[in-house]
Length: 292
Image (cartoon, rainbow, N blue to C red; front, side, top):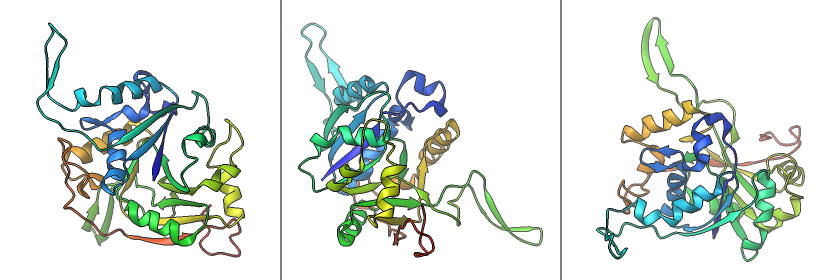
């Protein structure tokens, strides 16, 4: 099963970082956030990726063309150009890099990938700027069971501030920037059947607008509820927060068992997904689980 990663946006809220590179290459720790996202899928056995490139897409192509050199120690013989890798740290990934236009919207980028996905009855899609400890296998199983066209993962938005509980003036608990307890938002990590292309019109189609609204109205959109860790990287505040988590050695998206820091497999760590299905409808008076 293929996984589409949307990698073409401008990422303007990251300021000068994205004047130099596309947002998916902005680093969390020593690796681009794109590497972290791909490892989330790879840990669950999904290693076939299609990257929808746009803004500074050449930089992403260069990253993968030089992937082995960037992730291994090496020796270069400058007399004959021979390169020797001291390790063979690699990923079992197949990566298609497709230019989908610099100004194309999210739905338009997916539409431009139609020919690359024509053999896929089901495929996945997510954004190139967010990490989570979503159980991808359970997500796919949920999608297959309900037999509708689309599934999106809904998440609790993370709090910007620490949360405290009191007994009088005594602090009895403190959580630094926890997931909030109220409200659900689109967290990416979609699963689609190929019929989703019938809901996409052209380059200016925004996936999160008319297509998802129509899918909801047609009863073809389901929500996979993820109550655990999720964090996007929209701003420098988000980037710094993700780096703080990574540097702590306790990054939730990594400690579920992706790979360790030198790219070797680390599959012995597991965690129970705190999730439950939710049906999305366009009519809140008919369904109490309306979230759009």
